[in-house]
Image (cartoon, rainbow, N blue to C red):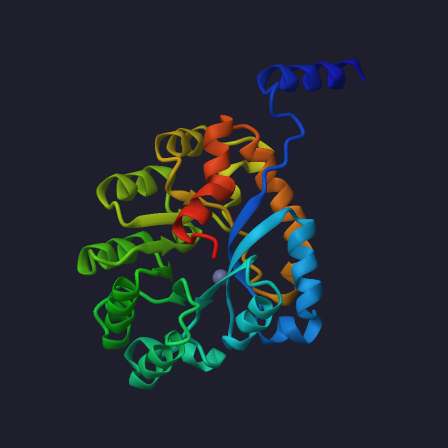
Length: 270
Ligand SMILES: [Zn+2]
């Protein structure tokens, strides 16, 4: 009992101004795909986000209609990203499919989309025609290309399409803070979202290497949840609480940028 009280007091002394603070969140990785909209009405999905402290969210869906369902109910809170997958079958073939390029081009005419993605591909697909078209469209429309790729592939994208702003999903899922830092220093068109990166704060304690990187590049990171399966909607609150816990271990001006300011800067509110 005494030991616990001492630990609590030590924590308060370390972060006296921020204990219990909840930052508003810009969640840069939400999906509301067909299975999700069968399970949760748009109102319910939006209330899950709101109760998790998410003020705005970058949303993409398979098919895209899910994103539109949420956007219709909350145009101020939902930042639509256009996912090119018309069905799950497109996931493996889209980068060389001209019909997917035509679909995306047509759909972008709505003018509401702030990113193309989240898309998955490998290094060999970087110069494939449909991906090239997406990179050109993103640059021309000043929107982001949101890529779930490894570190070698993201670097290929950045060098091949230097005029395109890239949002790197999950920081490549497994790239080390050292490698992420190297890419951020080299490419000013790269932003990084941290969905599913539990290694940022193992057991709740912010990793010192990640911490140093956040302090060095506070304007280049965003947080996210990734509702990649329907059951994940039940963990949005818990995942957001875990993010809040490590944000509180950063200086406030760094935490605020990562929590929501970078999202608002990249995707200015309407
Ligand atoms: Zn995802």
